[in-house]
Image (cartoon, rainbow, N blue to C red):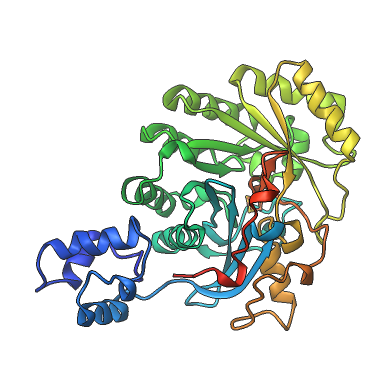
Amino acid sequence: MATAYDVDPAGLAAILAGEPAYRVRQVWDGLYRRAVWPEDMTDLPARLREELGRQLPAALSPALERTADGGDTVKWLWELHDGARIETVLMLYPDRATVCVSTQAGCAMACQFCATGQAGFRRHLTVGEIVEQVARAAAAARPRRLGNVVLMGMGEPLANFDRVWPAVLRMVRDMGISARHVTVSTVGVVPGIRRLAASGVPVNLAVSLHAANDRLRDRLVPINRRYPLDVLVDACAEHVERTGRRLSFEWALIAGVNDGAADAAELAAIAGPLRAHVNLIPLNPTPGYPVRGSAPAVVREFRDRLLGLGVNATVRSTRGVEIDAACGQLAARAASSPAAGPGNAAAGDPGSADRGADEGAHGSVLSVAKGKRNAQQAHRIGAQTRVP
Ligand code: SF4
C-alpha cells in the first residue's frame, strides 16, 4: 500500500474515484500545502477522512524524539516499515525554520569520520519517506514557516537521485518551498552534480570537501578515488555556471589532518576560482574515528588564512550536539541502547545523551553561523510538538 506521501496525483485520483473531481486537489493541497493528515482535514466529510486514513498511512513511525538548544533544535529518529531507522533534524529560528532530512537508511560512502558511514548502507528512501520528513517538520514548526530544506542527513542524496529529485520537485512545486532555499549536499557524486546542473532548477549545492588534495581526500572520503578533485571541480563549475547558485564547501577541521597552512592554501586554490563559500566545522570524534577536532584558536587561524587568500569562510557552531544531531549519531546510539526504541520517545530529554558528540560530514549543516541564534526567542516544542 502506498503511503500518504508516496502516492502520486494519479494514484490519489484512483483512490478518490467516485468523489467529486476537486477532491484530488483538495487532499493534495492538504498533504503538501497545509501538511495535515487526511484524518485531520476537517474540510472533508468524516467518512472520507476515515477512508483516506486507511488508504494513505504514514511512512514514518516516531521511535525517539529529542530537543536541545532550549527547544530550538528537535531531532527525530523514525522507524520505517521494514525496521530501518532514519533521522530528521528541525532547527527553529525566531521567524523561520530549517529541516535537515535523510535520503537513505545508512550510507555506502564510508567517509572515515561519519557515524552513518560507519554503520553501512541499508537502502534508499522512497520519495514519500523523504517528503514526509519535510511535512512533519513543517507541522512541528508552526507557527513559523518551514522555509529551508537541506538534504544533508543520513545518506548521500545524489546516490539516490531518482527518488531524491522527485522529492525535491514536490517540495518546490507542491509545498511552496523556494528552490533557492533547498540545499542538496554531496560528498562528490559527480554524475549527480551534472544531473542537478542540467535540471534547470536553481537549488543550492553543498559539497563536503574536507581535503583539497587527492592523497588526503582518497583517505577521508573514499568516493574521491572514483571522482577525483579535478573531475569534481569541473562538475561544480558546471553547476555554478548553469544554475547561477552559490556553491558551498563543507570542511570538517580535524586536528593535524587538514587544518594547516598548506591545507588552507590548497582549499583556497579550489574555492577561489569557483567563488565558493567555505563552512568550517570542528570535528568531534566518533567511535570509529577517534581523532580530535581542531582547537578553537586553530579554527580561527584557518578561517583567517582563507579570508586572507580572498575566500569567504564562516566558522559554524554546532546545533544539538547534546542530542547527537550530526548525521547517524542518534540512530547509532539508539541501536546500541536497550532503552531506545519505539515507544521510548524522549522528548525534552537532551541531557540523556552524551555531550560532545561528533559532527559528521553531512552533519555540518546542523550548524548555524555564530551569533545568528536569538536565545530570547527560544520556544519549547519538544513534548508539545505535534507529529502529524
Ligand atoms: S558523511 Fe555523508 S556521504 Fe559520507 S558516510 Fe556520512 S552520510 Fe554518507
